[in-house]
Structure formats: structure tokens, C-alpha cells
Length: 283
Ligand SMILES: NC(=O)c1ccc[n+]([C@@H]2O[C@H](COP(=O)([O-])OP(=O)(O)OC[C@H]3O[C@@H](n4cnc5c(N)ncnc54)[C@H](OP(=O)(O)O)[C@@H]3O)[C@@H](O)[C@H]2O)c1
Image (cartoon, rainbow, N blue to C red; front, side, top):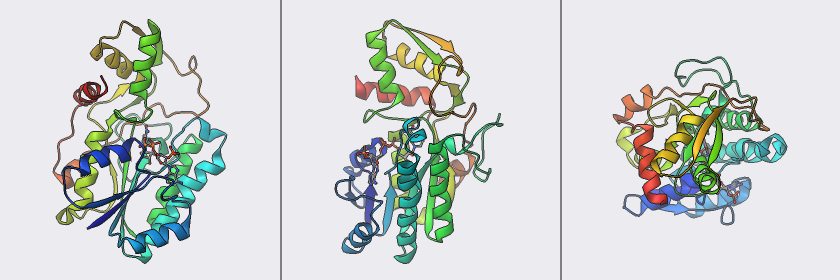
């Protein structure tokens, strides 16, 4: 089985690279230099030349704030390029595993959000990721879309590494406590994606939600990062009006994971246990 992983130098892609060394299918990892997913002819040649059975799309435009000014680029990568992958997947009978985000949801939620809830993005990033989801569903290809949230790992840029960096430079930090969600350790999600890609017995299809267990604020998350890493820094809560960002984030975007847990028969780790695992790798 030949599995193409796009955007392989990002957080999710690097976790999959690490995991694939344990064996399983034949993985082909590509970064943007090797394969730009926005270039249809390159993608077509690549999948035909390598007899690809499954694509795991880890490529995306992920800078949530910059997307507000670069909506054309975000649309091209998160929307148009995903349509290219989906249409080629349909034409070549390839299964497409794609990662999306809790930021496709906006205001008005106060309990975990289920998969078939209509999308209501508040930001350009969220809107372009919703475009990508729609393109996949419209293409008629075999697909699994996994919406995840607050992704972090020992690789790349993320909230955990940013807080560790700040906590070394300063002894006080303010972090918003009025946005509630669930962090996701990319290493945990990589295990689930590998299982979906390789195990034909579990031939699930459609949209699924995955994050660590637990619902917390960014403030609680930052406090735990500081506590578990013994950084000499105090974290104080603030609200989103005090800490303004270019993109508006949803106040509550906890994803309901009942469907993926039931259909794959998996248990999902608690957010703090996964955070501790990740910190062991970073330190
Ligand atoms: N990060 C989060 O908090 C979060 C939360 C929820 C969902 N997600 C979703 O999870 C997925 C993985 O996120 P991540 O954090 O691993 O992202 P990431 O670290 O930003 O990695 C994305 C990768 O895609 C590459 N890329 C960009 N444009 C490309 C193109 N046209 N062709 C090929 N590769 C391209 C990037 O390369 P360059 O760096 O060279 O541009 C980067 O290596 C994404 O779909 C994201 O939307 C992320």
C-alpha cells in the first residue's frame, strides 16, 4: 500500500514520519519543494508515478492571524488545492485523509460540537478550511476528514513551544481564559491517522472529530505548561478584549469525539497526560 503524505515538514507530517519508521505501509513523504499541492499537473503525475492508494493531506496554510491579510493565499492552499487533491482522488480511486479544524465553528456553542453541525467560521482561516471540507464532500471521492483543535507537538511552531519560550524570558504572562477548547497532541492523532490509513477493516468514511479529552481555556493550558516544566513564571488570566488578535477565535469550540471513539474503538488520552508526554520530548 502506497501512502502519500503531503506537507510532511509540518507538525502533523513530522509526527507521521516518526511513526512510519515503526513499520506498516509504504509511506512517501513530500514537502512543498517536492510536491506543491496547488499544482494540479505535478500532483497528478506524482500520484500516477508512485501508484498512490491513499493521500494523507497534512499541507495547509495555518497562520490564523496572517490569513486575515492573505486570504487569497489561504484560499488557494486550504480551498483550491484541496479541491485538486479531492478531484484527483476521485478520478484515481484514491482514499483522501484530510485534516480540518475546530475554527470552522463560530459563536453560539456551549456543549461539545458534533460532526454534522453546520459550519459558521469567524475567521478567514476557518472559512478557507470549510471551503476545503466542502470541496472534498462535493468531489465524490472516498474520504475521511478529521477536524482537530489546538494542535501541538515537539516539532514546528505551536502554543506549547511559544509559552515555554516566553516563560524563560519573562516571569509574568497573561493568557486568555474566555476561549474554551481542547488541545491535541499531534503524536496521539498520528496514531489514529496511521490506523485509518492502513487498516482496511476499519474502512471508515466521512467527517470525524478528534482532540485530547477535556475542555479548558488557553489560560489553563498555559498554566499547565508552566507548571509541568517548572518554569519560574506566573500565568494570569485575561480576556479576548485585552489580548486582541487579527483573527477572531471561537469562544467555545470543544469537539464531540463520540463518533471516532465508537467507530474505531479507541480511548483518547487526557489533555494533561499528553502534554506531559510532549514536554518530556521537548526538554
Ligand atoms: N496547528 C493547529 O493548531 C491546528 C489546529 C487544528 C487543525 N489544524 C490542521 O491540521 C493540519 C496540520 O497542521 P500543522 O499544525 O501540522 O500545520 P503546519 O505545521 O503549519 O504544517 C503545514 C505544512 O504544509 C506545508 N504547505 C503549505 N502550503 C503547501 C503547499 N501548497 N503544498 C505542500 N505543502 C504546503 C507547509 O510548508 P511551509 O511551512 O513551507 O509553508 C507546512 O510544512 C492542517 O490542515 C491544519 O489546518 C491545525
